Length: 309
Ligand code: SF4
Image (cartoon, rainbow, N blue to C red; front, side, top):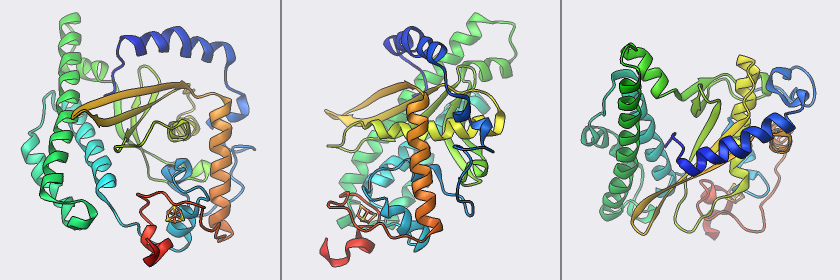
């Protein structure tokens, strides 16, 4: 998942990095300037998770009001569970290779994780056949991640036979997976979790499950942009490249595509607008009302629409 193919490497080296070097990022939008506007948050208090800043599923951002002001817990569904399982599968495999140099046992892992279906009923999409289909899909993502990690380890070992095992692993797989970081300097939560940061190439990855019928969206870049700004605020290093990894099922096959982009002023400014708007909703306990159309897989449908749905 976290390795680029030939075309993506050319895009990165021939287009994105040269643009980043030529255009650059305005100094005031680097995370290390968190103490001054426009990065300094207007509202402080209990920080919000970056996924709420980036999410654009609800056109009025009522999801923020419902979750953080009313304290309502969303009702999970099969799409949310699929996304969560794909994330867990990928991070479990990568971490196992980084820590132990080998693939974990999929069946044991699945037995543990499948208990998540207990929270759903058949109407919510948790039929046995749906679970079987999901298991196959998650296993494909697992297998692909495992083959890539193994290939990278073998290539690195054969290229540097005098390298220690530790050196081989941390350079072949330079990934901080589910990296926990404190976002409070920017008004975010203190326990953020970044899907993956490639510390040798300076790339922030964000993994997204695309359910059938949904499409890639430019706003999904907001998540990586937010994490880049947070890492800049904590570690004081520049991060210029983001990548949204879209995982979906097409023609019964796992499909992985990547949107690699320069985390320039535009997306940073957009992220700041979203952060400020959402912090304001919470600080002022402001109900932004219903949009003209709700997202059909929203976790708050029952709360917002009640019996209308
Ligand atoms: S149910 Fe509708 S109004 Fe409520 S959070 Fe979801 S999309 Fe927004």
